[in-house]
Image (cartoon, rainbow, N blue to C red; front, side, top):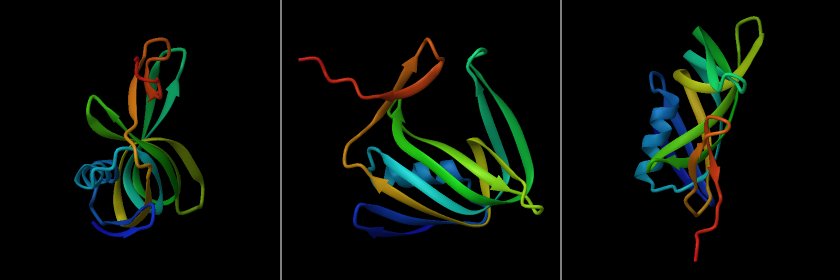
Length: 144
């Protein structure tokens, strides 16, 4: 990984073989980014996508073992139980330019990955929502 600091955040380039979410979370920890936004593109392999079934309160997963264009990654940065968490959705495209999309569970850079992290300047957290079965962004005001 390499990066360049810019006004409001960082441009980050991941190298072949780096796992996207793990590498971004490590960078977020090193740079003490409390919350923010991430977007990116590149080429990926060994991708696992998810779709959240609200009725079952469970993700279904689909593994994509080939190399795909990472057409778009969009996500946010928050903390779950004190650890950084990147919640990202992606669109990937195969050699026939057929897109597939979903929640990103895993993905490894196949060629390069180019990302922009916008640092929010404050820390965001996610807390469990028992009704939905997900950790959701929590903007509750502290009690006085």
